[in-house]
Amino acid sequence: MSINSEVETLRTIPIFRTIEPGKLRLLAFISERITFRPGETICTQGEPGDSAFIILSGNGEVLVDIGGEMRRVAEIKKNDVVGEMALLTDMPRTATVVADSEIAALRISKENFFRILHEFPEVSMEMMRVLARRLERTTHDLAVVRGQLAEAGAG
Image (cartoon, rainbow, N blue to C red; front, side, top):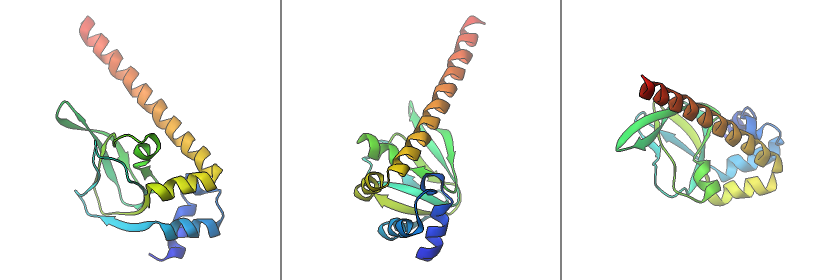
C-alpha cells in the first residue's frame, strides 16, 4: 500500500476525518505498516504499551485473562485504534488482541502518538469520544452481569 492509499484509508477513520490530507501524509509517513497473520498476537495483556495500532483491514478479537481463562470481550475491525489505552494511562496493556484474519495495520510509536494528539487537538477530542463510548459500553455490560448474578443468587 502506498502512502497515498494509506492517507485515503486514514481519511475514512473517524478520529482522523477532520485532519487535512497533508497532515495525514505525515501520520502515514511516521507510522510503520505491519501485517499480522491469523492467530498472531498484536499486543499482550500486562505488557507495557509502546505503540498503538490503526487497523487498516482485517479483524480480530480482544481477550482478557480472567482467573487464568482468556475471555473474548470485544472485536476489532477496519478503522479501529487499539493499544492506545496503555499509552494514555502509562499502565500495562489491559487486554490481549489477536488477529482472526490477516490484519494490515499502522503501528504508531508512543512518542509519535502523543505528538499527533498534541499537534491535532481535534484528534484528541475524537479519541476522548471513542474512550467515553467504550466506558459506557463497559459500564452497561457490567450492569447486565451484575443483574444476572443477582437474579441467579435470588433464584
